[in-house]
Amino acid sequence: MSAKEPEFKRFRNRRKDYPYYRCCPYVSSVRELIDVCVAKYGDKPAWKFKRNGEPVSVTFNEFKTEVNSLGTGLCEYGIEKEHIVIIGNNCYEWALSFYAVMASAGVAVPTDNMLSEEELEYIFNFSDSTVIIYAGSAEKKVRSLESRLPNVKLYICMEEPAVRDENHISLSDVLETGRRLYLAGDTRYTDIVPDTERLSELVFTSGTTGKAKGVMLNQRQICYVVSHSPDIMHVTYSCISVLPYYHTLESTCGLLGMFHSGNTNHINENLRTLMPNFKEYRPTDVQLVPLFVEKMYRSIWEKIEEQGKAKKVKKAIKISDFLLKCGIDMRQKLFAEIHATFGGRLLEIICGGAPLAPEIADFFYSIGITICTGYGITECAPIITITRPEFHDYRSVGTIMPGVEVKIANANDEGEGEICVKAPNVMMGYYKDPERTALAFDEDGWFRTGDIGKLYKDNRLCVTGRLKNIIILPNGKNVYPEELEYKLHRMSELLGEIMVREFVRPNGEHVVGAEIYPDQKYIKDNNITDVEGAVKEILDRYNEGQPNHKVIKDFLIRTVEFEKTTSAKIKRGG
Image 1 (cartoon, rainbow, N blue to C red):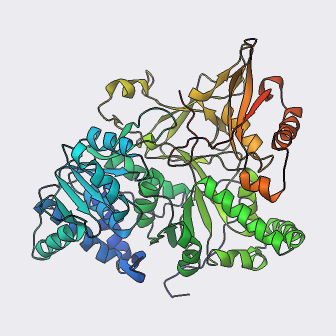
Image 2: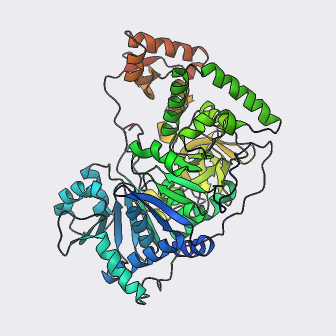
Image 3: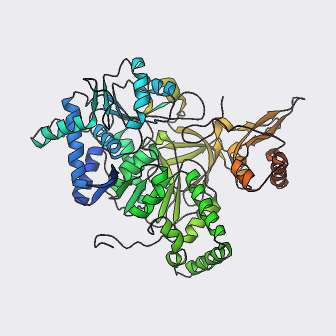
C-alpha cells in the first residue's frame, strides 16, 4: 500500500443515521470542478486505461491541460458554441471530449451507439447537432447516415478516420492544434465564463415506449448532483467504469462525480476485460446496473457450489453476521477468495436503474461489499435518492438527497402514489417540446416522475412501479406490474423474462396475466422437458400467498425474447 492510500475499511451498517460526510467542496460548473480538483489532487492519477494494450496514466494536472488544449482546439475550429454529439464505446477520448464540450459554450449530446440508424438519425437531426465526435466503434453507422444529416458540418473521429478531408478529421488534429495554441498563451477557451443556467447537456432518454425525449440539463443542475451526492454517498479511492458513458448515472456520477471525489477512474474496455481489470486495477468502487450485480451474484454461487463449499460459505456468513453485531469485522479474511476475484479492495457497488432483490444486497454486505442502491431519473440529472453505505435498508431505494423535496401525489390507503420532486437538479425541460414539458410538472411546479412509490422511515423512499403501466381491474383495484414481476423473478431463474399485463379472456373478462420467456440455459442445465408445466407450478406457488387482485390468472409462454431497449429493459409498447 502506498503512503498516500487511506486504510481500506469495509462499511458497517449503523442502527441510526449519521451526519453528512461533507468531504467534497460544492461546485457550480465543470470549469470550477476541474480547477478545484486539480488544486486538491494535483499529481494523483485521475485516469488509468490501456492504449494499444499499453497502460496509460493521466494525472489531474495533466488532464486539465488536455481539456484546455482540446477546448482551445474547438475554438480554433469555430465549434465551441455548437451542439456536439459524442458517441462510441467508453474510452479516454470520450471522457476528454465530454469535459471539453461541457466546459465550453457549447452543448454536449452524449448518445447511445447501440441505437438503430433510424433512432440515431432522429437524435442527430432533432438535437440540431452540427458536429459529431465519434469512436471507431460508431464509425460505420455515422458514415452511413451522413447523407441524411444536413446540419452536420464536421465529423471528428476519436481514432484515425476512414476518410480524411476538411469535413472529416481526427480528434488528435483538434487536440494537438489546441495544445500548440494553448501552451503559446491562447486564452480563448479558458476565458469562457461559465453560464450555469444555459443548456449544457442534451440527453435523449431511451424509454420503453415512443420516441426518445431530449432532456435539457444545465451545469447548475448537473453540478448540484455532483456536489451533494457525496454528502450521503461516500466514495473512496479508485473506481472502474463499466456503465456506458452516455448513461446519465455514469456521466454525472462517474465521469464527473468520481473525479470530484478524487478517485482514480480506471476505464474498462469491454465486458470481456472486466474481471481481469478488476484484478489488475483493484478498484474500491464501481457503478453497475442490477442486471450485472445479479449475474455476479449467480456466478459467485455457481463457483461456490462447483467447489462443494456452499455449506461452508453459508456457515461463514452466519458467523460473520453475528461477529459484526458484536463489533468484530472478519469479512476480509473469511471471504478472501471472493474478494480476490474483484481485486481484493472492492468496498462498494453503486447500483441504480432498476430494482435489486434485497437478499442479493444482503449477501454482498455479509461478505464485505456494500451495495448502495439508488433511485433517479434522467430529468433529475439523475439522482433523487442514494443508499448510505453505513445506514441501509434494502427495502427502500435509499435516502433522499440533501435539498431534494419529495411528495407522494394522490396517495392510496397504503400511502402509495406518484413520486413528485422539487429540487435544484430538476431539468430545464424537454428540448423543443413545451407541451410535454408542461405535462411533466403539476400546477405547483413539482416534477412528475411517472413512478409510483411511498415515503419510508428515516427520510427514505420506496418505489413500486410505473404510473403508465398500472393495471386497473374492473373492481377498481390497482395492480403494479413491476411489483409482481419482481416477486416472480425471485421465485425461480426459469422465469427468465417476464411481462405482467392485462389479459382479456374470450368472454370479455379482464384479468392479470404474465407473458414469459423462459431462461433457455436454465432449461438445459436442469433437463426440463415440460416447460409449461414447470412454469405453471411456479405460478401456482406464487398465487397461493397473494390477494385475489394480484393473482396471475393466465400466462403465455413466448418462443422469442422480448424486444428491449439498449439498457436491457423490456419495451412494453403503447
